[in-house]
Image 1 (cartoon, rainbow, N blue to C red):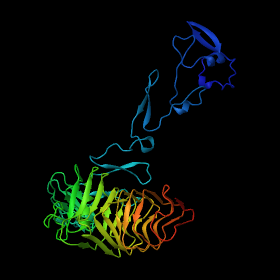
Image 2: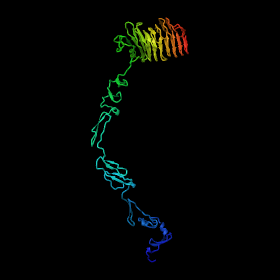
Image 3: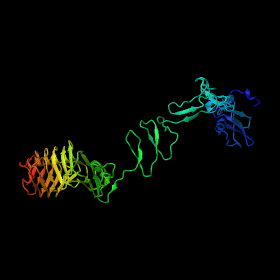
Length: 499
């Protein structure tokens, strides 16, 4: 075949792979097919010393069979150095915001980066040249700008009602404001600038101020003095523990400022109540405390009711007249001569005459027990009874007491309202035939009387006994008529009398 330029050859039909193609292999011209050439792995020759490699960079060659086109987008570029040379891939330019960059190649010193209005790029706000400017917004469509504090010409501070004061206020340029004064209680302060060592702070009577309480002697305690005044340090009230019996004296010429321990005008108490109150401060420690009328000339009459309350220490209390029969008289109008209320000990009455009364000449109330001496005398009483046992927790231990009855009562000699009385081995003397409209002795409301070895000299009028509402009087075989009276006793509502 003559030499004909390839461009003069007619265009071939589509290749089928069977077309013969000449090639030189190891110096010898041979033939192969287009299909065999097409089957060769790209970049690797099976019979060549080195593989067949080519990369099409220009898109104008993209129509070549099995060809690929390399293309680059900013900031990546491709550099083709020519045949048998490497293609260089370079990253250059500026990485934009959508690719995680800033989109800018330079940031001014101390500038502030700010997104543009749509958030696709970043701009820089230069640093402010004036000290004290603030980066302030200028609307959502424009970036913020450095601006001065517009409209503020001074800054001031007030203490208001806190008690604090402010110096150097207001400030119109540079300066310092200083707090002073005292922070008051309503604002969480104390209202005071100094507290002496070891003082106790106490609110005032209306809670708006604070004061301090002076410290006290070692061992003192802070005790309340009422809701309207501040507490004070006081010695603790410690009970004196008795190790022997004690006697307090009462005289009409005495004084409640005395100790009560001496039978004289300068030593005795003036009132019986003072003596009972002092006794209540003691720990009896199983000892006997005696409150006694001192020796005075003539008959002395006391007209004030007395309360005996809350003794401590399991001892006994003896309330005693002057020792001369009839010289110590209690004549109280409209009230009981003695009220025993929660005494928690036995109280013995001796060497005195009792008159007047309201509920009883002696009214025995909860946790209290009466006993009698042989020189006790019960006179005319406006009271319901000479001895009134008020409730089921009260009682009497009248044992071996040869006491006297010299007057009437409005109801009974002994009236028991739920309590219990042991009346044993007593020989009483009755003078003047007194009258007991209710009964000489009565028990109601589950009360009880245990009476043995009872005898009475003299007579009285009225019912001998009355027993009602499940109460019991037991005389242990002494019969129905042992109690004074001219009317037979009676029972009612479950009351029982055991003769």
